Amino acid sequence: MNLGKIISKLWRAKSGKIIKIIQKIRGLKLKEIKKNKSFKNSMRIDLGKKHGFKKDRKHIVVVTKVSKRKNKRKARKGKIFGKLSSQGCIKRKKKISLLKMASNSIPFKSKSYTKLKTYWVLEDKKNKYFETILKKI
Image (cartoon, rainbow, N blue to C red):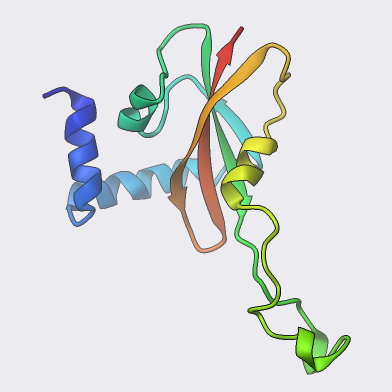
């Protein structure tokens, strides 16, 4: 068995202490990111290899930080804006998923790179982190 398969098996279990330690280390690295950052290696080796990432000059991995949004609108001192029927959190839906937001917010020149895949890496209380694999044309 290669390293990718072993890591994917550990990742699926998610009860192991090793995975929790790896997640904490990744979280410390990713908290410093402002919005986007490019890396030479992918954080999740198993998914990177599965979706076509190779260690050469043509491939880049970009980690994107997306803040989790709340459905409810913030109101000061319990004020009501508009009719009462439109105030529930069920009615206000997100127009776009966080994964799509992450893949759309990459600042690299889209003419010279193509997007191969975007996938989830980690999340904390405020943010979700996604990896996007880019390939040079």
